[in-house]
Image (tube, rainbow, N blue to C red; front, side, top):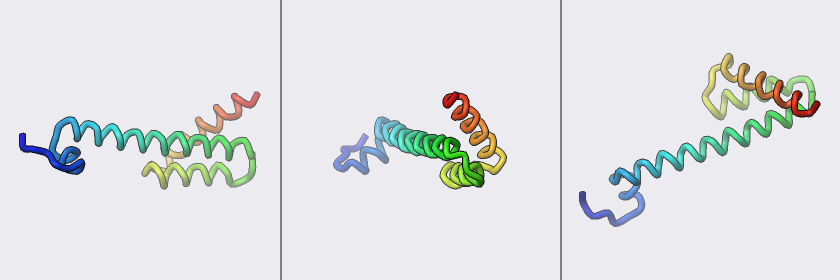
Length: 86
């Protein structure tokens, strides 16, 4: 293994760096997903026409989901949100 002098070299050339980089990317994606789920719950609680479509578009755009998968995710989130409100 060669000497590593910069953070970029550490991330790109060491095994630990590659694992760390992968974990950081997963954390960012998980944070984004949690944020979007909270937004979808807010849309569900508002109970306005068109909010389900907005939620589906959000999931499709931010998480590269097909319309069918995004619709299923939003349906489950909306259902859970309504159950929590009871």
